[in-house]
Image (tube, rainbow, N blue to C red; front, side, top):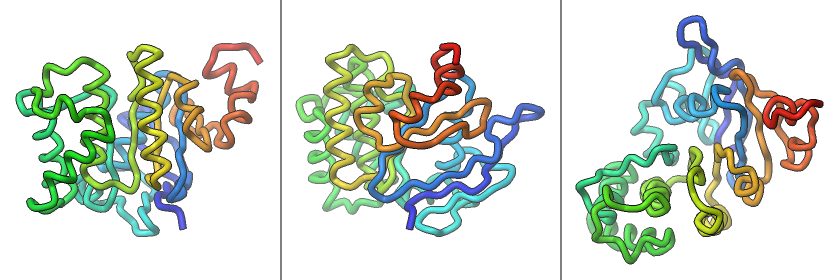
Length: 239
């Protein structure tokens, strides 16, 4: 059974249809990449999955259970974690305290378990040496790592990554991709929106293309990127 399914999901803001009859399945051990031009509806799709906005029509299923009307916190508790394109830590709290908040209030981790749980994630994401540093003073790479770590602290079975590699140097991107690949190898399903295609394609098994809110194509990354229509729409190369 798919861990996550969307069935004919649509969303409009006034006359603008930002998600148009989108359907797909995510398997429990799968990493799915999402690409598309700016304004294609990628981040809106994440907001629909997490419950930050409600669809006008369609259903969202987690483990076959309809969660379309569940609140965002209910979806976090059910196993959906998310990082944001622009890191949004609690700037006055330490890196460790940011994870503690996510673990206790998002993941329902017990007070006894939380310290070891959070420190293990900090070390896995390369943040162990800055655990006591204020989150607001971190450089970009570490802020991106903290976004990933906070999502992991909620004990997700599906992690949604929103352009987590954007703005990083090549070396920083390589480091972050290695961390994401390791998390996926441990059994966490991933949906990853990204413009840094070489980073995305080094992790995902399938690639989905959105254009004007519609699902244009989904399949193996090589086949998708070889499509003349995708190359013309996404890369600006004439078919």
